[in-house]
Length: 77
Image (cartoon, rainbow, N blue to C red; front, side):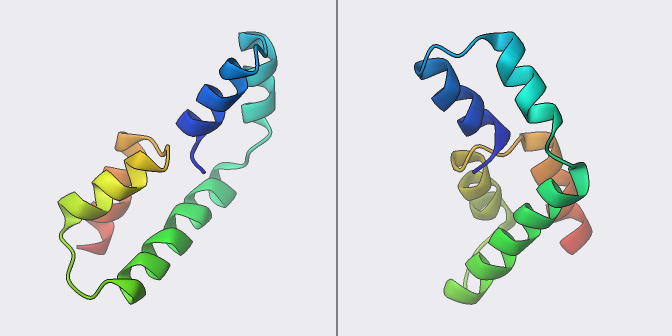
């Protein structure tokens, strides 16, 4: 689950913005990118035909940020 979905879920539980921000700071960038890459690998094995647009839409629907997703997809192309 991406940071956007995490923020949304925590806000729906009435967690303060400060606590959400502090909690998300704990997530290491390397771990976050690794999670995205694992999802990309799994998705590419499950679906043989996919476009970068479809992959980006899928990842963003999982709550990952567009900037990070587009950079990763550009490197894989």
